[in-house]
Image 1 (cartoon, one colour):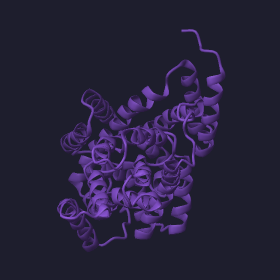
Image 2 (tube, one colour; image 1 turned 180 degrees about the horizontal axis):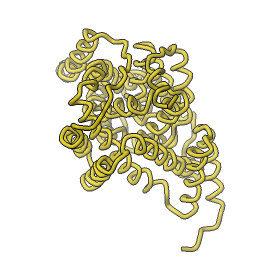
Image 3 (cartoon, one colour; image 1 turned 180 degrees about the vertical axis):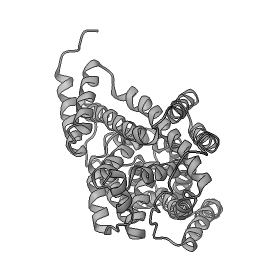
Image 4 (cartoon, helix red, strand yellow; image 1 turned 90 degrees about the vertical axis):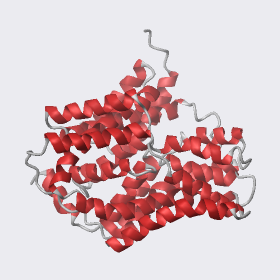
Length: 411
């Protein structure tokens, strides 16, 4: 039986919320490298190792989350939890994946974890090098499955070129739409069997309610906050809007958050930049930076309560959008025209990963010949020796530290 067939069977298998929680908790402690690297870790864990999803279902889920505002990798995690264990699974996936970095950053806000001097260390740089190998593995695996012919390889390459030429969230959405249009025109005659349903255990009534609640919060919260002096309402409004209006991943939210918390005097510019530096040194989603900001707020609520309020507010839109959109997406992806469009969309998503592989993953991780050698070793361990990603992460951190002790290679 092929891997794809086993993946189809596993789509119908329900997993307990506890299984979802434990799996994502391990990923929450070991998923360094940013949102694109997270998608690589997810593919390795859920497509290749556990086979909870087949490659096609995973790619369709990634494509949906690229369309939605918010942190794409966290939304993919929420979607995986939702499809395998319902609403409880969605919360289990998010809590487990988010908690390690949220706790670390909130603790840093208290001054408990001394990241100063560690952020620029060789170990942290080694984690960036490992991210290069992880993303390369993701691009390699997805390209083999989703770009099996010259036409789709061309779509992927053109999508990558387009995003690199015009970086920004609008370009990302544009190349996905263009990929879908190409799929409708070029792949209409391709033999494409109907994909297996994802098994989303959410009714359309609840889905519509979540979408309505998302827009009500986005529209109503600014008016409610403007008419109140309550600091909690101000925080919820600011962080909910930041989580609702971001396309392109965690790094894009930083200017929005800075504009919300620094001019208002809630957080000093120095404290903001210090927290941003610390956020680069922890695994998990960059949106957990909100927990740090809540902890160091000048006005109350701050501390643990402030961290929790800001964290929940910034992630609430992601929950509402994924739960609201996934049932309709699951039905839409089984229509013939949409299946043809998805052939082009998924090829474009491979192109997005390819572009992200170059910038920022490669450009920030590979700074020397030693870095390139370490990345190649990590890639071989992941792809050919099938070493567990968490172990490769630890080896990469150690390797990065060792590299800093070596004399520079003559150019």
